[in-house]
Length: 76
Image (tube, rainbow, N blue to C red; front, side):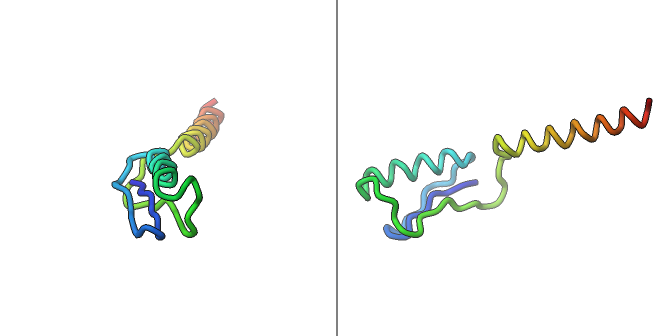
């Protein structure tokens, strides 16, 4: 889960399943509260279980493909 955190306002967003959701919340918050300026120390917090993001899936597929190729080469 991901949360947008603004230390200037001392506020933290509700949890989002994807990082993109928390990032979009940050954009809306900055627009509404800070005139599109980035407060010092703002961040995306990662809590507990996270769904693998797009880059994670690509890396997992690459590793799985390499392992499969190695297994097939051993069998032949």
